[in-house]
Structure formats: C-alpha cells, structure tokens
Image (cartoon, rainbow, N blue to C red; front, side, top):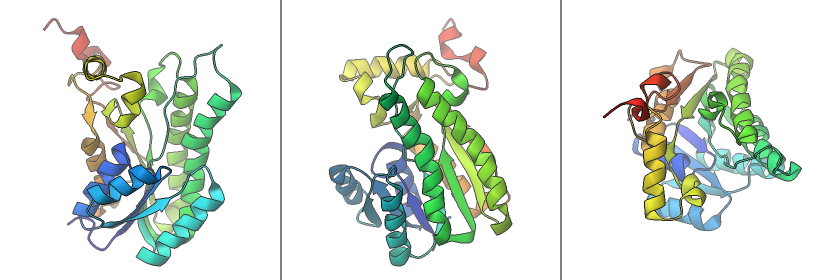
Amino acid sequence: MRLKNKVAIITGGNSGIGLATARVFVNEGAKVAITGRNPKTLAAAVETLGGNVLPLQVDVTDVAATEKAFAEAAEKLGNFDIVFANAGIGGATPIGQTSLEQFETIIRTNLTAVFFTVQAALPHLNDGASVILNGSVHAVLGSAGWSAYAASKGAIRSMTRNLASELAPRNIRVNQVTPGGTKTPIWAPMAQTEDAMSQLEARLGGMSPLGRMSEAEEIAKAALYLASDDSSNVSAIEITVDGGMTSAPSGAKIFRAA
C-alpha cells in the first residue's frame, strides 16, 4: 500500500480524474477528503468509494470557504501529506464571441483558485508533503478557440515550477500531471449521444500515436506516483499522459495509412 497512513485532499474529487484519483488513493491506503460543488455528485462519489472519504461541499473559487473546508478536513483526518489541486472547468472562448465574464470564470477557476487551494492547504501541510497540480496539453497545443483555458493551463505549468522553489525549504514537492484527451464527463456538452461520443473519442484519440483517449484511472496512476514516496526526490516536473500526442505529433494515428 503506497499511501498507507497518508492524508490526501483532492479538489473536484466528485467526478472524472478527481474521482478516479480518490479511488486509487483510497485503495492504496490513504485517508482522503474530496471537494465538490454539486451535492448530488459529491454524495454519489462517497457511495462509489464506499464511504471511505470525507466529502466537503465547497466552491474552490470561494477562498474563505476553501480555507474553512480545509481546516475542517485537517481537524478530522490530520494534517495533509498530499494535495491534488484538480478542480477545473473547460470551455471554448473564441475571439470575437467571448464575454469578459466567460473568460474570467475560466481563469478564476483554473488558475486563481489553484493558487489559493495550495495557500489554503499550506497551514495544514506536513513537511515533506506532495502537492500535485492538474495541467493540460492545451498549454502547448495552440488550439483555436481555447485561449482562456490554454492560458490558465499554461500558467499552471509555470506555477508548478515557482511553487516547487518556494516550498522546497520544507521539503514539499510540487509537480504536475498533464492529461491529454481523457474520458471524463467534461466532454458531455460536446457529444450528447453515444454515437457523437464515439466519434469524438475516435477523433481525439487519432491525434496521438497510441491512437486512443486516456482513461481517467491512467491519469490517477500518474498522480499516485507523484503522491507516493516513489517520487521522493522528484519536484518541479510534469508527467504528460497523452499517448504521445504532444511529444511525437508526427506519429499520430490520423497520419498513418492503416
């Protein structure tokens, strides 16, 4: 059990990558707290995980509420050994068609809230803890129409390195998982039928040499490595889980004859 007796807190742990990571962490022996905005999905997550987690209904963009929730988690579970700042939202922001509110909501959720998540956790972090931020391949892809999302994830990429330096005196490691296209509910608004989802998966998967989208558990296992003592001298890096899409784009399945 790689996380036995460790305490972890995962934002956005009620769905997708966060939920998959909570499951992996629990199975590896950790005591886990998860946050989520939606009480129904939060309750469903607790049922799925067998009640072995502490649910915290909180919107991470509310700094005071996040600080209060983290203090509650630390009081009930103990100080944190692992923080996974996972919560985030998607959303296209095409130039000429985007309101200030749309743009700022993405930045506030995906960037500002991540910084204040780490800050809220800091008083409750054990020395030698592991902080993991959730990035995205959008930081480097240059996808048309996704400026706010890509900017937020590019900033996360930079902040991972800054925080790694800042927290190093306490031997706190800061790293990043960087998912490519991953099968999570985030895609539901873009593919509302089974056929549409199959087409989306084929298109996104075809952009990588390995030819498929990632499963949420594959991202969770990358987070597990960064959370565990297996990575005890690893800091300021990102682990990209995208089937080779960003590092070997010329090998993408869509370019192959068969």
